[in-house]
Amino acid sequence: MDYPPNELAERLTELEIKSSYADDLLEQLNMTIYRQQQQIDSLIQQVAHLRQQSQNAGLLMRLDQHDRKARLDEDEEILELVHGEGRAKECRKECKDLARIQPAVVGGRVNSSA
Image 1 (tube, rainbow, N blue to C red):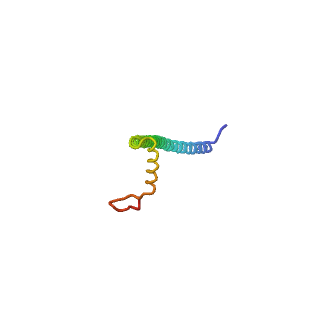
Image 2 (cartoon, helix red, strand yellow; image 1 turned 90 degrees about the horizontal axis):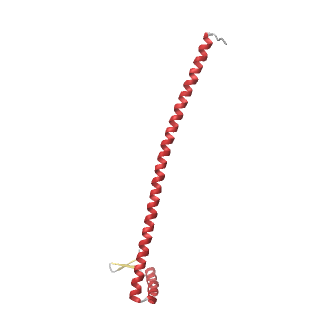
Image 3 (cartoon, one colour; image 1 turned 30 degrees about the vertical axis):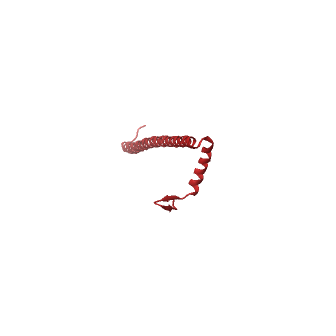
């Protein structure tokens, strides 16, 4: 196929334009991939941070439950020592009832906000 020089020059120009568009598109795609990888890395760090916070919160809850159980066990032992085993149950019920109905006394006055 023989092309006239003018037509050959036009075809070469069209190919150069298409190549330029392809290069621009490739660079845009590379930048998009780069930004997405940065977002993925950031999300991975956030998930790791949230996982650590969740584990810490779970540990604190278990420690708090353990402390409450230890205090209840100590209270139970004291009640049994002071009142005997049978009376300890009655004392626990009385303490719960009093805590529920008796207002707190602050500085000799009844504090209705407690």
